Each structure stands twice: as structure tokens, then as C-alpha cells.
Image (tube, rainbow, N blue to C red; front, side):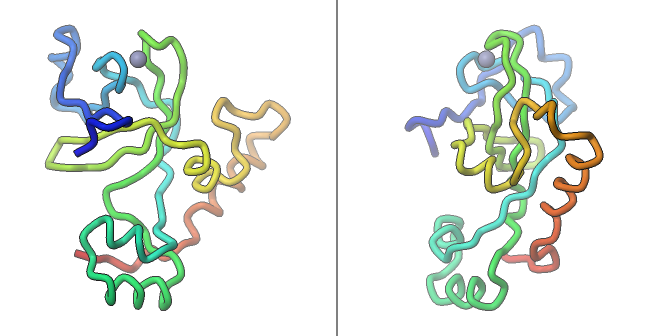
Length: 149
Ligand SMILES: [Zn+2]
């Protein structure tokens, strides 16, 4: 699991311990609880390799991608979080790895661009809320009824 580059976080700050019942995502740099400032954006696999990375067989993954085009990645999403210590908002690629356990790593730009389409990570003031809402809705038109594993 990703000690390389990304940072997987089990460490937590003492001052956040009382919030343990909530979904907890931690800053990769500070290990402190970060605060969600966006909705969750679902992620889709478009290439067989992405499914193989997640444990699907080569043949099955090729078939799935050929059949469905894009497959919802269960338990993975993009979400923007505010970190008090970083003092800024960043996009994270979050994966559920257990009942209430999550891994968060900074999302590469291409990933959130792909997931959020036209939406600027800090909010684009030239885009009206209505337009932004419309744009978000297009994110949910992928294959949702397909489940694997
Ligand atoms: Zn931080």
C-alpha cells in the first residue's frame, strides 16, 4: 500500500479523536482530520488496466470495458477537503479500505478534471450555480448498475 508518493494515513491527531465515529479522512501531509468542502464525485474505470489494478482478471476486465465502456469504481471517489494546517483546499482520491477506514491521496489533476469535467477545484466564479449544478449532474450518467467483486 502506498507509502510511495501518495501517503496512506493511519495516524491521527489527538484533538480529533473524539470524532472517530464519523467518516475520517486525513491530510497526507499532516495526518490531521480534513473537512469536506465538496460532494463526492464518483470515479469510473475506462481501461481494463484500471480494473486489473483492483483485482479483476485480465479477460474479465477486457470484457467489462468492451461491454460497458465505463464502470463505476465502488468505494472510490474524488472529494475536495480543507486542511486547517495546509490552510487550503485540495482534491483527494479517496478509497474505502474497511468498515470505517479510508485511504486518501492527493488526486492528480487529470483525475479531478475527468471526474468534475468543467468544474474548477476552487469554484469558478464565472459559472453560475445553476450551470454548475447541471454540470455536476452529467457526472452521474455513467454505468451505475454494474457491480464487480
Ligand atoms: Zn494538511
